[in-house]
Length: 78
Image 1: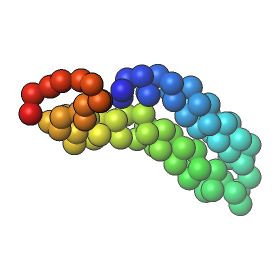
Image 2: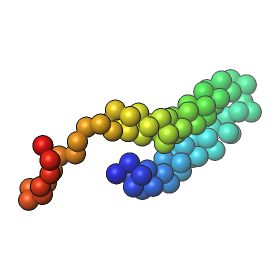
Image 3: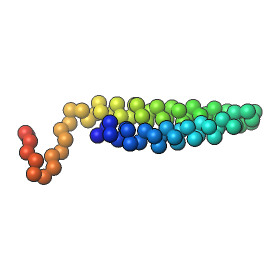
Image 4: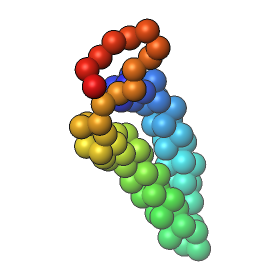
């Protein structure tokens, strides 16, 4: 489930971050808004990395030893 969710959500997450970075690039040359642009660009890149890498890894580590709930009609060991 983690891999399929990651492949489905990869493009929208990256495109959103890219839009923020490209939009903030214009503000880099303004001395007043330069700090804001740097913060927005770094925040978008860091949040994208955390969303695509760290969150799925933490989720996997947390739930790897827990059994999946069975659907009705399936048999399994208890």
